[in-house]
Structures are given as structure tokens and as C-alpha cells.
Amino acid sequence: MTELADTATIIGDMVSELAENISRSGHANPAIVGIHTGGVWIAEQLHQQLGISEPLGSLDISFYRDDFTRIGMNPVVKPSELPFSIDNRHIILVDDVLYTGRTIRAALNELFDYGRPASIVLATLIDRGGRELPIQANVVGRHVELKDDEQIKLSGPDPLTLEIQKTV
Amino acid sequence: MSRDSLQIDTNGQLRHFLSISGLNRQLLIDILDTAESFAGVTEQTVKKVPLLRGKTIVNLFFEASTRTRTTFELAAKRLSADVLNINVTQSSASKGETLLDTLRNLEAMHVDMFVVRHADSGAAHFIASNVAPHVSVINAGDGRHSHPTQAMLDMFTIRRVKGPDFGRLRVAIVGDIMHSRVARSQINALNLLNTGEVRIVAPRTLIPTHAESLGTHVFHDLQEGIKDADVIIMLRLQRERMQGALLPSEHEYFELFGLTEDKLANASPDVTVMHPGPINRGVEMDSEVADGPRSVILEQVTHGIAVRMAVMSMAMSPRDTAAGQPHAG
Image (cartoon, rainbow over all chains, first blue to last red; front, side, top):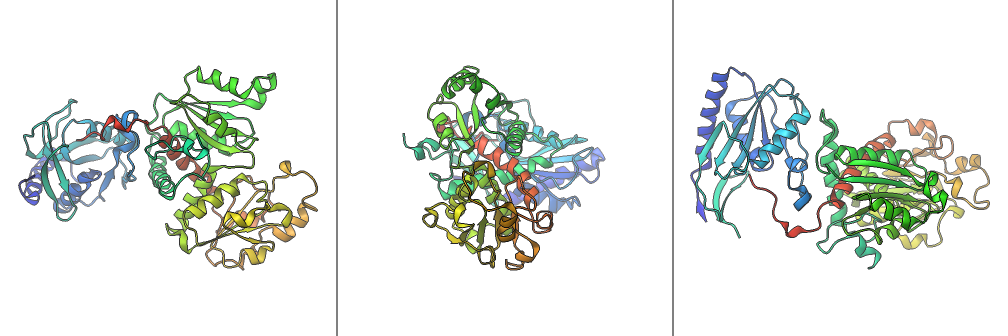
């Protein structure tokens, strides 16, 4: 197992890039939504460091997965909480690792069942490539090259650590 | 195959949902937790998740029902399944077709799940032991035997109001225990969740003979039975199932066993009053109680949808867990 760069440093980089993204777009006061579980940890950090006034949202995309018919119900589904109206809102969607793109597809579908956002920006801590869908992040903490038999795992929430592991 | 193993597959997952007995504590908690997540779907603008898209669910009702059938239908629709309601009392059965033939014909239409209500105890078990391997069966009430989704929505309601520790709760089930499949399932579920004390309160004629062996304390006096109770579950008087003179009159029943604000003073100050519906006002309880601040009767109905979504989606989860891990990233 290899330990990666300090997670706090990567999040710091994401904060500056997101701040720039927000000021460039002119979308003042966006809402941050994290995807369970790792994405929520990252979203909490971004939410605090960007000084966002809207409460933090969280999504559990289990009910929107495309592999339910193959693997069934996730035994630990948490309720999604979006404590604000999605309609006409600028959303920053946050996940820990961007890989196949299927989780983001599910998250976008779930968001649209809550309303019609004005815009969605995707921010991920890690982009490890390997996309199976045409989905890209707007803000990426780090790009990481991984072999097929490797995976990257975020542990947390305190401390947040990244590890590259061999898949069994 | 024994009745118990019919419900659970070799991986310990729900395959059919036929009765509370035969299930373990963890599975009940999994159902409640999953239902808690589904409760949030109601807050969405689009009150629907795509989990069971393309699946066909048949509500096979051999006995009249409004609340149960409607909430099963809504649950299935919120899971994006296609739903058919078949009221068998008005169709083939009256033309002489056997239950098995009705079943085979529906299976030939590629149905994925049957939700079954039947006046005979064991009907859902019978259907579950005769369906094709990919088909799941949910018991929506069979005779006097079992009504497991009603029991689970009651547990869900109790947990929401009183918190997850059933060990500190005193729960009194009042009324027609004898004819009640709801009471049987509730008692099983309350015991599995380690409820502090489960009481049943009824006239001697409405208590089954083996009542003590259910793990309950039996009371024949309402005031004693609800003393310091945290939860009171009132049952409907099932006149249609009563044979012979079990009760002198509804009026006398109300005098002795009907719940009123006065009698509630004996219970815990923050007592919660429940009823599976439909209520006979002025027989099981006063309107003042049914519509009062302690009543969660309408919440029970709402919770029925989330609990039924949980049970349906868990039973429809694929059996082959060798297929892999959830998708990453």
C-alpha cells in the first residue's frame, strides 16, 4: 500500500480552483452537494473553507445505481438530504474518486428528481481515468495513474487519508 | 423446504416476505433502515426512484382492502415498477379456476412479484412455494396468520417516535387479538426487537388459548393493561371473522375496552396511540383519542409506503451475489 500526497494540501488546491471558478462564472452563493460517503467528507471541507452560507447537501445514489439488477441493494443506504431548493440553483457536486463516471450519472439523475438546477459543476479529489461514460470533472484535486488491479481509497473523516491498494 | 428457509436465501437475504417469524433481528433493522432512506423519496419533486424499472408487480387480492392495496401500489410505483391490481374475488375464482392455475397464468405474463392477500392462513406461503425461481412473494395478510408489512410499518412508526431502543418500551396491544394477524406479526416483531414488555389486553373470549406462550403478559382489564404504557396499539374489532357470541355488544365492548382520554391518564404521559385501521370510532376508541395529539394513526399510513418500498426492493434484489461489488467512481 502506498500513501499519497497529503489530502489537506489537495483540498486546499481544490478550494482555490473552485473559488476562481465561482468568481469567473459570477454564480454567487452556490450550494455544495457531496456524494456519500467520501464525497460528503470532501464537501464538508470545501463548504467550510469556501465559506458557503447555504447548508451542505448530501446524496446517497444507491437508489439510482445502474447495477441494482446485478448486485442488489446496498445494505447501508443513507437518506439523501438537500436542505435547499434545487430549482435555479448553481450546484457544486463533490465526489472523492472519479473513475467510470457511473456514480456521477446516477447523482445527476437523482438531483434532477429534486428539481431543475441552474448549473452543476463537478469537483473530485482524485481523477483516476478509466471513464466508461462521457463525464468530466470541472475541478480535479489530483490526476492519478493506476494499474488495472489497483484502487484508490479515501478513509476518514478524521483524518482524511488516501491509499492505493491492490484489488483482490 | 421449510417455511423459514423459504423467506431467506442461502446468503441470508430476503427472497420472499411471508411472516416475521423466521427472520432475525438484523434483517428487521435492515428493513427499517432501508425504509428510512425511502421515506426521503417523498420529499423529492419527482417522488420516484428507478430501482425496479421494467419489473412487473401484481397485487393479487383475494380479500378486500383499500389502505394496504393502495400503499403497496404507491410503493411499487415510487420504485418505478409496473403494477397490476387483480381482485380475485370478482374474477376467475368465481368461475372455478384454482389458485395454482391463476398463478400459472399470471406467471406466463412474466410477472416478477406477487403481493398476496388471502382469507386463508398460509396462502402466501403456498404461492411462494409454487412460483418460478425469479419471482418473489410478499404477504399482504393471510387469514389470522400474519401481516408482516403492517407489523414493520408499526415498528418503523414506534422507532421514529420513541427512538431505536425498544428495550425501554412497554407496548400494549389492545382488542381482538384472537382474530388478528396484525397482532401476531406485531408480537413477533416486538419480541425480535427486544421490546422491554409486550402486553396483550382483551376480553377472555378474544384472546387465543396459547397467548402466554407468545412471550406477552395478558391483561383482561384495560386500565391495568395500559398502566404506564409507552405505546398503545388498538386493534379493529373483526366482526366479520367472529363466529358465535364472543361479545355481548359493541356498546359494552367500548365501555370496557374502548380507549378514551380519561382511561389514557393511566398510561405514560408521553404515550403514543396507534391503530392499523380502519377505525371503528366509538367502538375501539373515542374520536377524541383517534384525532388527538397522541395519535400517530395517519403517520402509520404514510410510513406504510416507505416500509413496503423497502421490503419490495430488498426481496427483488438479485439472488446471485457473485456478480460483483457496487460500481466504483
